[in-house]
Every structure is written in structure tokens, then in C-alpha cells.
Length: 270
Image (spheres, rainbow, N blue to C red):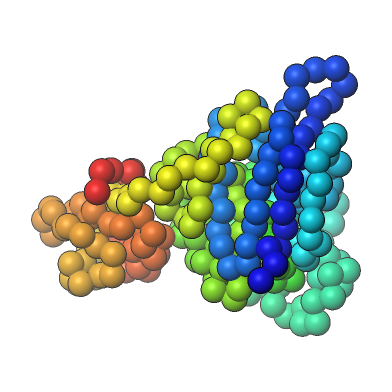
């Protein structure tokens, strides 16, 4: 099967300065989640802009033209349109036949406030949720997400993890960036590191996450039976879970729905 998108020797340079990207080779097969790890200024946003077709490479070749959903690093939320009107407009442009999916999607992402309020009045976190909604709305073949977990509350962290997994399950692919190794390891099938414009593959290692929960009136739940939970310590009202990183979002969602408060989420050794 042909890959959705292939980058061959792709580079980007502005004026006479140092290249932002240099000779990037990347193949995006169908049904995979690719995480790109890098610090600020490493070229992550430039890479996704080129993949999304909103920036032209200085050299190199892109092969493939999948339908793309794209969340930029800075979602342009300062508009007079409301969140609902904005998403309806984009849905019509992208050929989404059923506009009734918009409100449930916003509710799932936990949009706070009136969806008919102007985008420019939304907080950064809520604007990010609208940006995520527009990216996944048309169920694209390739979903490009630039630092998508930044600025989101804990509950929406878990929902975004579900959306990424659902995208892969329907045979589409996701490429996302982040500066935190634990986040990339938790959600990606294939991990790459971008450093000074150079992209290299990173060998995958098993990862676990430590989740600390508390509640004054917790709903009875045997955490040891929860899929992905390796160890459980603590007493009634406060527990510390060691969880397979790939299952962390599902465990967090279960905890929140059961009335627990999330005190800490941190990577740990397996």
C-alpha cells in the first residue's frame, strides 16, 4: 500500500539565514500515529506547515495528496464568527454532510461557555478546543496537530487521546508534535526527534505513567482490575496508580467520571 505522504529531502530556509529544516525524509503510512519530539525553535511547526501545504519547501519533494486536517500551533481565534458558525462554515467547505455532528463534538471536547459567542472572546484553552474540532470535523485521512495538548485541561487531554486513537482505528494517520517525551511516547506508534532542522527516528521504549488521585467520596472501584494499571498503592480517598502510558488517558477519563480529582500525572520508569 502506498504511503499517505512522503517527504524526500525536504528543507526550508528563509532568506540568507540558517536552514530551519534540512534534508528531512519522512514516510507517513496509513493507520499510524507519528510523534515528533523537539524543543521550541527546532522546526516542528515549519515541518507541519509544509506537510499541511500552507508553506512551500525551499527544496525537496512531497509525494501524496491526502485529505488533511490541520491544527496550527496558534489557532487564529480572534474572529467575529462564533465557534458554531465557524465550524458550520468549514464543514460546508469540506463537504461534511451532517452539520448536527458539530455540537456533540464541541460538548465532547468540553467547550466552556456559549458556542454562539464570538471566537475572539474565548480563552486560549477554549479556542484550542475549537481548533481541534475543525481539524477532526471532516475525518481527514491525515491529521496534523501542532502541540495539541498545550493549554488543555486534564479532561480534554484524555478526550484528545481518544480522538487520536479513533483516527488511527479508522485507518487514517496522525502526525503530532510536542516538546515532552512522555506525551510523545504515550500516544505515538513511531517517534521522531527534530533537532536543529534534522529529523531522526527514536527507538521506542515501554513507558509507564504515575497517576495520583484523591476524593472525599470516591465511587467504589477496583483499580487493580482496570486495563493497563500495573500497581495500586494508597488508602481510601487517595490512590497512586502506575499505568501503561498507552492507557493513561482511558484511566484518567474513568477517574474523572467516577468523581476522583487528579492530583498528579507524571512519567515514571516501567
